[in-house]
Length: 440
Ligand code: 5AD
Ligand code: SF4
Image (cartoon, rainbow, N blue to C red; front, side, top):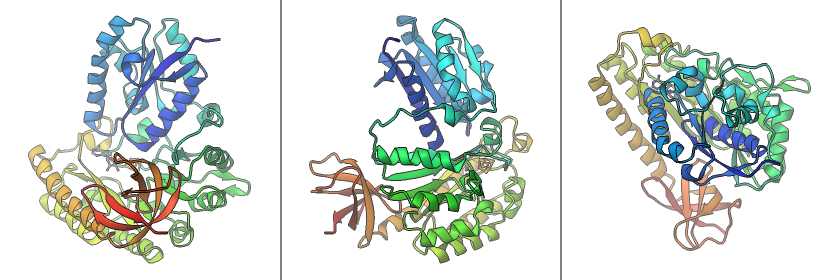
């Protein structure tokens, strides 16, 4: 019998890391770990890191530095680094920061329990392999523990697209889809534990092609299987690539009631020259036509996107093409970034844009995106939407939830509970949320 120990996981980056952290916590639960509320009370600290942009890795190193004092006070404290920085930097992490005991890449999480034992015995352990075995099968969930109304479920991992700026194909590896029956079993278990909304995750989720009973399933076919699950009310998926937006998935947005009217479809840039250099294999025009087809299937769908400004050799005219595309699409929400050099990716070697110019472009793009986001949010006032309540708000009697379109919604004097789905009329729009009232 192992003595109870406390684990603190700090998660950076994408939703897949959030999912992975949860699975790591469950895997280490078998080693006697329970959740620590803060790093101070932990026997083991794991940083689940992100490598997508420069500052993320630097943040990890400075965070690690802050644990020096803690480790000096508590020599048995074990410190681990997981995630994409672990994969990309490997041994370098322990060289740069000797207080690290354990480094584990995203494909080796199922080996964490063994690694933890070795670390306890004083070994420095590193695993950044891409093993053959199915890590998800080996990362067993803690059965039947109750959980909140929304959950992530990874269905696909890795990417074969090799956009010229992106580290994902190197840190997460080749594109792999999980078999459909395992996903359905996990989804059923989540629903039994109180989950009402599942977001299917994958770096290239719409490239999903997991094995089913009669051959591979597309993402749309998987969604239709999930649609049959009683108790599951809402399905979302993220992140999609424009080139994998197949007809059956577009149609499902029009016909599957549980599939929510929200689509994250990154375009990255609006200039065909830049898109080509990014190795995106779509044009601005083909993206716009695709958005048209999606809106024909589901006119009220909220489109979300990702943008990079200041990609090598981007001129003012190229940037203007991005602004033009944004004007045409009208994004309900968007994430925009200044290009950051990732060593080992093709674009890292190319002539870089002046950083002051790139900053200026980012500000102009963000001003436009924020305006659009606000306009779309404001246009919800007076409309009836579905809201899934997640938790009580700060004021007495208030409940917080998300609309079908993923807007945060507050309802005052609300007699509903977390996990309840209700029809709500939107009455006002604030900076980052909507206020609504229940419709009886
Ligand atoms: N620099 C800036 N942004 C990047 N992204 C990915 N790689 C980089 C990079 N090197 C952005 C893309 C992607 C999102 C997750 O992060 O927009 O869609
Ligand atoms: Fe990276 Fe997405 Fe391009 Fe894949 S499709 S290389 S994850 S930006």
